[in-house]
Amino acid sequence: MRATVMYEAGDVRVEEVPDAAIAEPTDALIRVTRACVCGSDLHPYHQMEPSETGTRMGHEAIGVVEDVGSRVTKIRKGDLVVMPFAYSDGTCEFCREGLTTACVHVGFFGNEGTDGAQAEAVRVPYADGTLFALPVGEDDALMPSLLTLSDVMGTGHHAAVVAGAGPGKSVAVVGDGAVGLCGVIAAKRLGAEQIIIMGRHEDRTALARAFGATDVVSERGEEAVERVRGLTGGFGVHSVLECVGYAQAMETAIGVARPGGAVGRVGVPQEETIPASLPAFFGNVAVGGGPAPVRAYIEELLPDVLEGRIEPGRVLDRVVGLDGVPEGYRAMDDREAIKVMVRP
Ligand SMILES: [Zn+2]
Image (cartoon, rainbow, N blue to C red; front, top):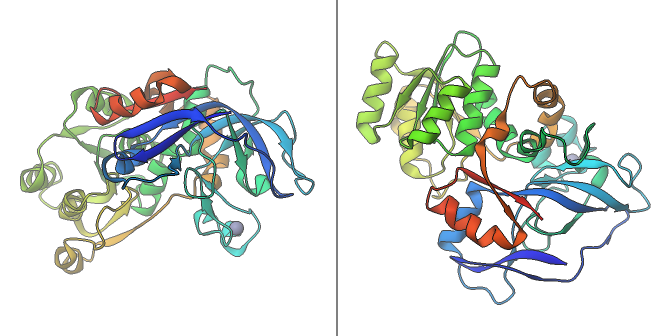
């Protein structure tokens, strides 16, 4: 079969690899019908050290179940399923608490030892816990929005939940990538009153406004912090969604939080330490977040997608075939595309 492999920074290839196959009795094999390139794929695209074997890429997919292992009981051959970016058993203490990304058996797709989703097929461990069967056909018009339930919509929602976004609250979203834009949808959906998108790409901030953002702040650093304070009676926002991962983004996030506020971080941190420790401390600002338990959020978000109340699929503004994946990375890296959908 064909799959995407990254060999070093900037070197993404689509090549012939051994066919994905069931290896454990709890596995399923899915034929990928939709996948994506993720903003987090751009981190290795910038930084990966050369590797002889390379790394399989892609962790977001919708696919059709082709085969299941002998101990899979809920997921059936022929199901159309969403595959979250992490696999989880669905039964351990953390899965039962809804933190599926802390599952005692957790693993992440598109890593050493796992298949990647930018491919024709994927082996899915713990299929019953990991996969979610959809009540639609594989070419349903809602496919882009359903695909975001595998990562970006659930991740934006997680940032909003951790930051305590809700009725009457003011929210700032740091980052205008796909996750930040989904964070705007999530904040609006949870009832936030004021939603400030912080970003400087006009096409993206326009989409943020369409999703419910009330204000746009395109400045950076101290100027951005001043603008947000100016928009919020001088004090900053209750809830900040940090959807980037770089130190400056976190510094801005803590800077725009009002005393007693909270930062929900979902951008993969690119530094070992969290900056702005002192302002966070003296402002009693809570900093939380991590890999979103998107599997646990699908039940809650799916009805809003199916009934058209939210349209997170609008962040997928370019479509490529499997051969177009390397070009998809380039387009996202050059900010020509917000997020690229792959149709193998
Ligand atoms: Zn678990």
